[in-house]
Length: 268
Image 1 (spheres, rainbow, N blue to C red):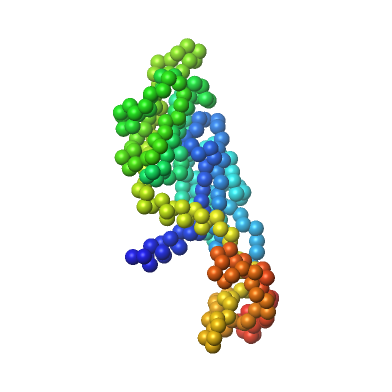
Image 2 (cartoon, one colour):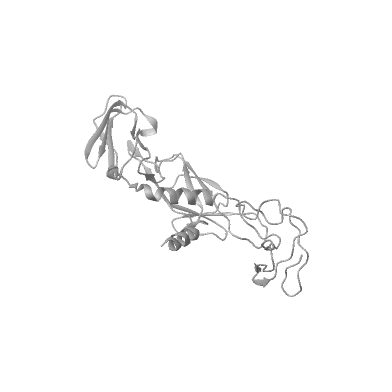
């Protein structure tokens, strides 16, 4: 079971992390938000700048930058060369007088759940009510965020808000659209945090051929370089980082003697 879990984690480590700034999935028409793609780059056989691919639904967007500004509703994803596609972010655009904004990121048990009821282009909302599955849960005299300090699975459901605005006189009560919120179990939080940390680590690139350090004793290991198995050569200098270091970068402080012909182990 643990082996399967480890394989599943490793299989998803290369997936880029797509984030939204500000972190609300619903905006008013005409507003813009910024999407950012933080990618983990797998082994590359050549040194070239890493470009980012952006998708709106199944449409490939023209930008190759790490972050883009958008205002069109839909499902956004990103991808870096050689890596899987990121998880999606659903962006909604509203023409209503009132919208309920919830965070795009997953909320886990024990974490705060924050949402806000927002009037058209930040007009003050009066007599503000928040609802959970149709039941009122909080009242404010005027605009304020609703916060659940330590969310539980029972806090999942459909949320809505209502209130009045002075346009210019006070209006009748208006209601936002309902928004689904899911609070995930705490046992999944550690795995998700691990993936987010691993995805931001420096890429390992094969700009120069690199092999594992020679093992002590007679039994030296076998290294796979460009699809060819060879007995590793002893480096002339010691690597700057320990062999077990997570941030070891090939070609930095290690020089190799040319290997035997026929395997492409030496310099180009």
